[in-house]
Length: 298
Image 1 (cartoon, one colour):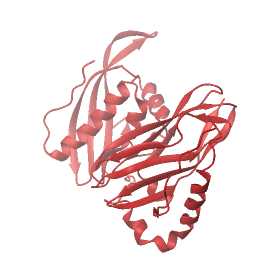
Image 2 (cartoon, helix red, strand yellow):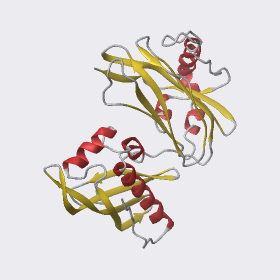
Image 3 (tube, rainbow, N blue to C red):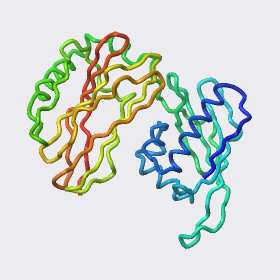
Image 4 (cartoon, helix red, strand yellow):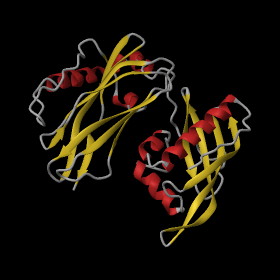
């Protein structure tokens, strides 16, 4: 497969916009839906599987894009628009029957130091008058939390309680779950954490089968997140190989993925409770708890 993009770029912003779109389309075409979804923030696709379904409905299947070119890239401040002209394999009765041209229209918005896709239209150009997605993230996402620590003291209690839970035996394997030191950490509200941390479970799990829960972290700020770790309380019906995941350092503009390898034992909806994140930023240690991660086990 040959993937190309337009070389007539007017500015560094144009290049960054086109790099984001190129990464998105290349990841989708390679079948890496989670990576493609990590470049997107909007309402067109709720989960990675939705991305595949909507593209398939327009005749754009995984590994069907033979080449594409980005045209008419326009950047106005923190908003950009571009069109992907794709040569896509056409199928008849599940057999390749030549290629056809498909147009995909994109809107991107700048969030911190990164450009993210906020609108994808497979039917026609996107109007500049459409309402933009409200996804602005401060250059230093933890600063507003620090300024309002007196208002979020309740989080401290929850985090300290979680520290006790994490010191119990791991129900899934009988070993000790590592204890994260949060005694000196500044508490962060889940709304702030959710701006740069995303849990991506599979659409469905099978009881008794090994599977994965992906964790994506984007660093939108100008400084690195250091010694970042994620841990959670897994129910006894879900075996997990490694409940504590270490991300190490995540540099400015960097996106990192780690995976919980799990084996659910029984069918039904089960929850990974009290996922907690601990990290250092600009020399200060922070911690916070996010909403449970729900798994649909069949």
